[in-house]
Length: 234
Ligand SMILES: Nc1ncnc2c1ncn2[C@@H]1O[C@H](COP(=O)(O)OP(=O)(O)O)[C@@H](O)[C@H]1O
Ligand SMILES: Cc1cn([C@H]2C[C@H](O)[C@@H](COP(=O)(O)O)O2)c(=O)[nH]c1=O
Image 1 (cartoon, rainbow, N blue to C red):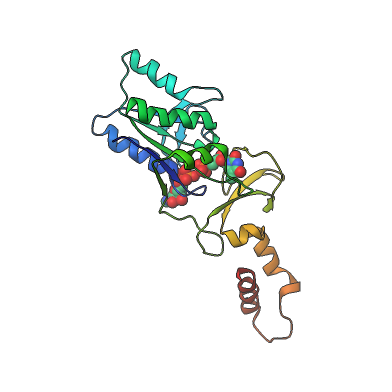
Image 2 (cartoon, helix red, strand yellow; image 1 turned 90 degrees about the vertical axis):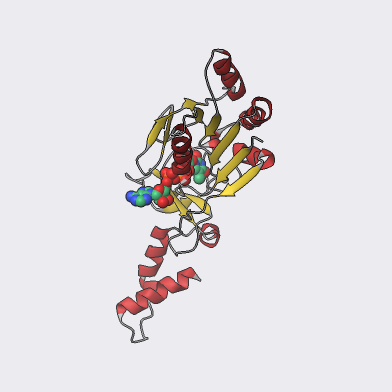
């Protein structure tokens, strides 16, 4: 029986890589898929992974009907054995309903990939609909890590290394990507540090601050600095 599977996780945990692997394994066996995406960092009509692989995809723009697209494609003699949808957090809830209809009415497997929550740890509407409709939800097993070494479960948006909590829900961007001052970047954090708005840069700044270095312990500076970091981890 065909199914709607939702593969989710934080940014940078390997979702697009898995999407490309599923595509590779199936096409290597002669199957043909249709790939949808929206607002991939590599540009319009692309599905890309940080490992350097990229493939062409159909851009699911606002108002684009994924079910109608597939019916058109099939009725023109096109072939489709399965569907892959990446960056599904950006899809409208109606488009997720269309993915479910592709499973139910066209009897095709749909593999959907996306982050569940935004930089404020609120569900994206598309991801919420996937949680509501998916037959199967898989959290990716390659864990991204917070700077403290714990499993990263949340996505932070940063400006100048500091976490921000104001702004539009959708801003395409990358982890480790902050360039010029004021540019938006992202960093994955554990919940504790997301709640405290403590990014790698702000933890480093606190650790190095003279305020938190014990002055009369007789410790070596390196040991004192480590102790400051331990305090932040707690
Ligand atoms: N230079 C590298 N060497 C090995 N693995 C890498 C490298 N760069 C990225 N990765 C892997 O790729 C993952 C990101 O894959 P990607 O599919 O782009 O993530 P997502 O789609 O979830 O944002 C990282 O978590 C890491 O496991
Ligand atoms: C948290 C968050 C992320 N985004 C954007 C940033 C990236 O372009 C994508 C996630 O892509 P990835 O392949 O999973 O790394 O989503 C956003 O627009 N708003 C957010 O709050």
